[in-house]
Amino acid sequence: GAGVSQSPSNKVTEKGKDVELRCDPISGHTALYWYRQSLGQGLEFLIYFQGNSAPDKSGLPSDRFSAERTGGSVSTLTIQRTQQEDSAVYLCASSYYLSSYEQYFGPGTRLTVT
Amino acid sequence: AQTVTQSQPEMSVQEAETVTLSCTYDTSENNYYLFWYKQPPSRQMILVIRQEAYKQQNATENRFSVNFQKAAKSFSLKISDSQLGDTAMYFCAFMGLTGANSKLTFGKGITLSVRP
Image 1 (cartoon, each protein chain N blue to C red):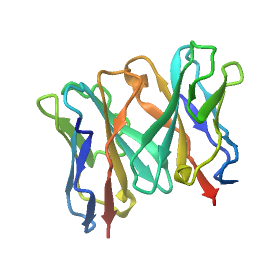
Image 2 (cartoon, each protein chain N blue to C red; image 1 turned 90 degrees about the horizontal axis):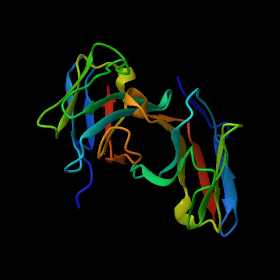
Image 3 (cartoon, rainbow over the protein chains, first blue to last red; image 1 turned 30 degrees about the vertical axis):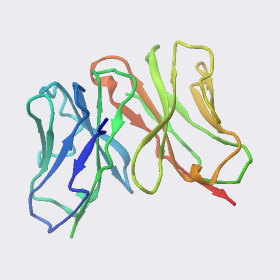
């Protein structure tokens, strides 16, 4: 079956612009996670969804970051007024349910802010 | 909060030989999962092996096995008969079982190079 997909694969944007990153989880997976991978910070957790609900937004690095999930499926991570330190690979993962032991990862979106 | 430490930034091994990647973690939880993920240059994170903390028996998956020492909070990965395709970054990760702790907490990773 289809795995987790993310789009775009690569995104180059100018500092100050807004960007939207999309994640399509595996069909039937109720839990969805966003992670960020950068040279300085390694792999860090950003936010998770159970269904359409995100109970804990404390992992988001600033209020420029927001995420939503609609219909229990597709999720969008939005970064407003991008900064150079936002440059990273953004990874999405999904699992059957929260605390399911296996998270399936997408190929990531490489964001470069110039 | 949980922490995962991988102190070796990189390692190299000859093809067909055995290599061990180290990982330690810290948590106050009693039940949790531990994982090793592989990330080749394609960026795709691939689950290599997982260990449930309540199981005393070490997990094995073909050429991959772990040495899980719960009291010492240590979780090392042994790769036997190394292959060129094993060249990748390897991440050790922790996951709790309840609510917000179900996120993965990763170590900084280790770059493994397999030499022909």
